[in-house]
Length: 452
Image (cartoon, rainbow, N blue to C red; front, side, top):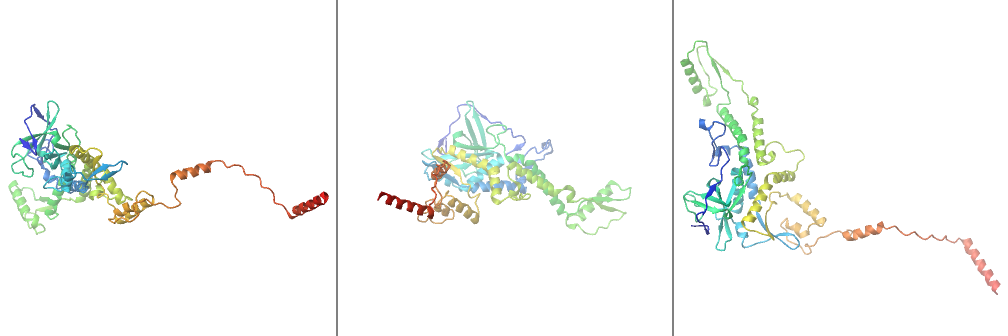
């Protein structure tokens, strides 16, 4: 059978599924074993609930959105070793529009979310009649299984339900095995197997569960009118039946919407409230701590997602530079390398993700930077004007310098000449005085009379 123009045949040798060493984490949406013995108690945590925790959602949203804002740049190295943007009919169309239902930005976001949530991103290639990749599809990691043959070749088993019609030319309800050359497989932290990645969500799981339970308890507490529980005391001799009846009466009449109503109970009963305050449990500190632990798992400085204070003296450029190096750069490098390999992009062509939208400076900062680059001879006036969407000017493609600036060769020559020792100057003859001039005149007259 054929899929995406590729002939898929039954494997001649036995394929062995890669062992899943991810323990209690189940990728189909829930955690089966959040703590030892949980499955015996029928206790599980759904991934959808964990993703509702604000710091975790903020980390995932921040990274995926920022990865989506950095477009792909197809570049070519010229004879001077300078990389310039180019268009290529074999690569540019699929980089500009990866598939029929996603923009390039949505495609990059899906790639980032898959690897952050599952530790693996599987991208299926579709080829045309020439064998050129003309579409890319981010697959659901829950429906992809890596497999290894006896000779060590890697294959991937794809399983899709009948209702999934996003992928064209699929065979609903069947399991399709494709070779590794038709899959781009990005993976994080291959702790247990080289084909199985472990996501940062695993490390952020317990802090997220802790913070989520704190929020649920706080929600229940304030739903009860922010009134803590208490103890009803009565004289000795009350039977268990009477105690249960009084308890039910109190809970039904004076909790929730009925909080604050006047209670009248006989038999000399008294209500003593628990002395519970939010400061006793240090809820704010606990929530901040869980948020910082989640940011630690994703490599995000906490202040990027609004946790804690911005360090004193740190500028916006410093903040974004730190965030880009710690959280985004590994994902960027991995995506660039995998796309170059998957699309068979070879030198002198190369693929790069443009980080300028992420590190975009304000108008004043850009003017200062590009103005200084023009003064230092690094950029031409037209290159600086292009940053502000201004047209080129006559003579703007030339680097300008001041007249007193000398080429390095001339400066070195002048420096060497100054370093040579100067020749000794000839002694100056003393100037003649009027007496010397009169004496010379008398001597000349006497010489002439003597000759006559």
